Length: 443
Image 1: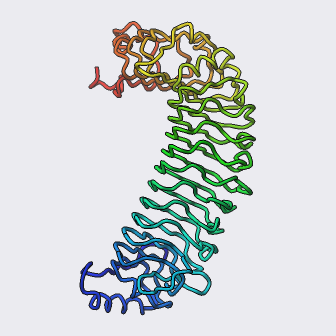
Image 2: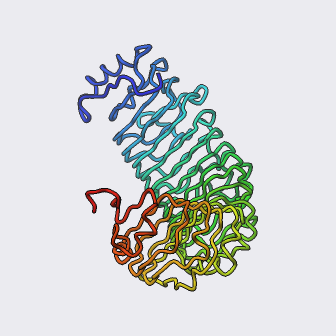
Image 3: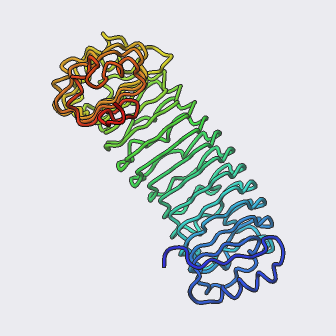
């Protein structure tokens, strides 16, 4: 059985330890049937190695100071949550000699079955110590709302089998590791809301298993570690609201077809030069970043930008040269610089299947060259262009048209009445302001 099984917990969360302890003690002596244990302030109970407990949650054990090797059930696979343990200072600290306020991990085999560890809201926790003691099987580590955590490991080591590492809202965290390397097995890294984070690690080394990296609201992070270009399996790189992020490391990006998402990085001015492989690029609210066709791979399949400055730079070199581009999204800002018709007199890639345009307040029409000759375009979306009054001749391949926040165009597209109706009458699906225009109730 892998899911949560029978659940037993102390009826009185704050009081009769002896009575509740007897109940749990009896359960712990059963050889089978218990897969999940959730308790408050009962760390002294867990002394039975033979207890068949696979999942454990510890909450509001305010006398708990340390977690280190001892005598948890060998069957334990998941510490579902260590939460609101106000005095917990260190995990896996072999230097602690006091047993009265310590949580015990098995001495033999370093608790060889533990796979998942979740730690939430432990305000006194400053670091994880000898994490090699759970190295052999721990694959997922999640830490959230630990306000005094400054680093994950003072020894420079993380569990060697770790695949997924997630850290949220640890306000004093300055570096994942002050020294040492990330485990070679690591596949996903997520760091959210760690405002003082300055460094992830010194460098990436033999991290070829990496598939996803997310850094969000890490305001002091200025760059990524050296060796970013060696992450040959990288699938998704997300950098959002990292105000001081200014550059990428030497060597640039890996030679993998990955998605790059960048948002709210005001100091970032450019991407690495001569990018060899990038399947999707999404850039939002990065006003100082410049783009050029020479810096982007022509095999790019998806491009989303919200800066008209960036769009104009690409327009000058020719979007039609992106011979694999299937998705293009161009969004401005309602109160920002607007594209003029002459800015959009360009030829789009013939491979394009979906086009989205929005928040361009002064735009009156779409003057793309040879727009009706695009052979693959099947979806067109136009949002928040209040001055737009007309549509170009549309390609016969178009199957979906979505219009929102364009009052003049909406009037022009009225069924059987508007001057633009004849252009959209044969499109199978047309929605204007989230209403299907062929619905009799909308007539």
